[in-house]
Amino acid sequence: MPIRCLVFLLAALALLPANPAAAQSPLDKALAVLDENADLLRKDLGVPGVAVAVVQGDQVVFKKCWGLRNAGAADAVDPDTVFQIASISKSFTATLAAMEMAAGRLSSTDRVCNLRPNFKLYDPWVTREFTVEDLMAHRSGLLPCAGDNQLMFGKGRDELSAALQYIPPATSFRSAYAYQNVPFIETGYIVEQTSKLTWEQNLYKRLFAPLGMTSASADLKGYLGSKNRAALHQMQHGKLVALADDWPWMGVAYIVGPAGGINASLNDMIPYLTMHMNHGKYKGAQIVDAKALDDLHRPRTPLGGGILGRQAFYCQGFLWEECDGYTLVWHNGGSPGHKSILIFDPDAKLGMVVLSNLLETQLPEYLASILFRIYHNPQSAPALVQELRKRAQASRQPAPGPTIQANAKASRPLTDYVGDYTSQVYGTLHVTTEGGSLLVALGRIPVRFPLAPTGEPDTFYLELPFVDDDASGNAVFHADQSGRIRNVELVKFRDNGPPVFTRN
Image (cartoon, rainbow, N blue to C red; front, side, top):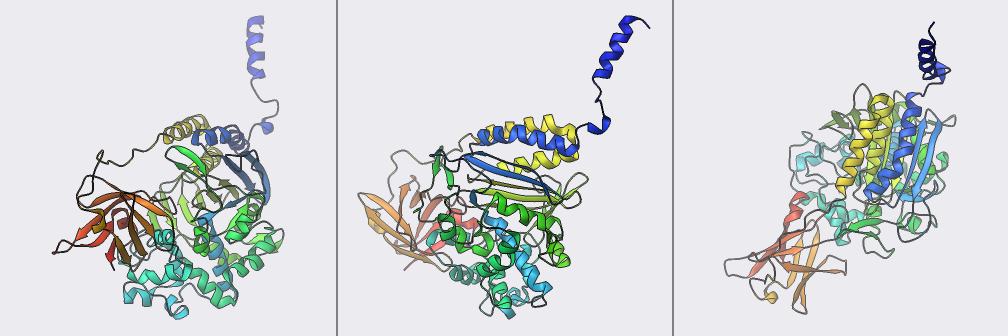
């Protein structure tokens, strides 16, 4: 054999793994790419801190944290750092309902009005037919997140539910998906009634304690009392801001408790994820009846595309998503300053938890995309990472602000607008003047916000805090035939329920 050919042969052999069995597995590849890029994406997206865990079967195969608990301090995020998990709380409430069903005290076909006589929707027929399954499947016919803006007015949990009767439907009952928080609260009330324990007591006794979720809690006191907790962060006018503990809306997640009020660390969430991937079993103990738990993951309401796949459905406190040759079960959550996801492939028994401390970020979804897409298609890694980083960097561009005419003046004397304006859904807007400016306060919240003239007749721009959604927009006052201002419409509220507030 010519020496030249021998050299080429040896070089080719050197490129082959010494042991084919030792070649990088799809999971190893996915975890390596995740480890290499998670912190880069965190920085691209401007997220202060993130905690990530991956579980296969019942084993933790990856657990790592990056960044800070508070952007203004030096304390690093670790696996015991407590975050608000927001709407992932719905899956906990649904799990409690599954426990009640397994115990024979509740059925998914039970009518809500029979369990909760005060429960009322706009249409009496829908009220009579509305079942427990409807509550957890988001097919009420209401606008998406109907009534959520009530949270800005300082209303309590009972008041949120009571206002549902004043919100007209947007579609026919059971015909379309529309995500909800306020109606989901009723699931917690029903669990309380059938179990004879409060929603919080149920959590501690039946989930937190058996799963060893020692730092988990379900109220503002539990969050603020955690020495190792991640601060709530928002981007305000292009600047990263950590919300103060006395921020007036710090407790909104706990008002909708069963829909979004749980605090937990990465180490708390790992056993919860493991239990759901293993049909209710954790460390050999059957925490939840397998049949009842698995039924929570069954598709109910179609909603179009999901975060990774072509088709998705809402289940019962979870979403089910069809991807390229595999399925995912998941739920994400966003509070006023945190974003999270719990997601797993039930066939591969591969799951992930991501907790981050910034509102309005796609970091949890991006990291989930890395894990599952590369696990199922390792060759996709370079293009996927490039695309995600490109999207992350582009998302940092500030959104355009409202169009307001320079030096605009109100179209009538400011005193014409002064007064209280009330909505049956939200409460009262208190409009006052001070120092030549028009101001408004929301319900029981003492903070006053400026109403800036836009240059259009009787129209002002109202910038509101990001509590559950971006509710900022024009406030348009309307006069009666005599010319006296009679009501004000908050235009952005059209997306959430009746937008008109009538003068008292």
